[in-house]
Length: 168
Image (tube, rainbow, N blue to C red; front, side):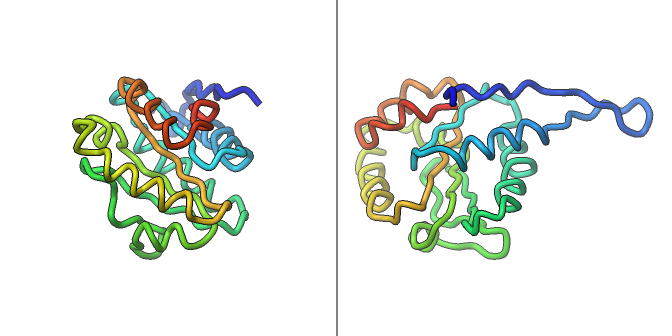
């Protein structure tokens, strides 16, 4: 499978003349890419103000949860630090709880974390990757970032060299 996923928007019209963007096919393609990936760390990127968060929360996460894989899908957003709590759809859980069983951990607005000075985020990054690597093989982490932070995001290959093949 090519590491590039085409997420071309398709405009539709509902209720007369109100244009609506149907992202269902995009979400299904990205869901399949994530589920089929052999990588445990996946980086999704998009232009600034391209409604990435809306797409992730309203289109992708429901399809991941409906996929029937038995894996839990949790969501958290950087503020700018890494999230301490993640929304599982039914409750708020810690990163340790999310790492404790098979699932997909989505970390949104990762550009906020990456925008911090490297020295300030180095220790946190090292601890997070140690915890991630100690988790079971059925845990995937999806980092969502602004395309402008790709250079900083590629520095994460020092912790996981396979990341270079899992950028979408």
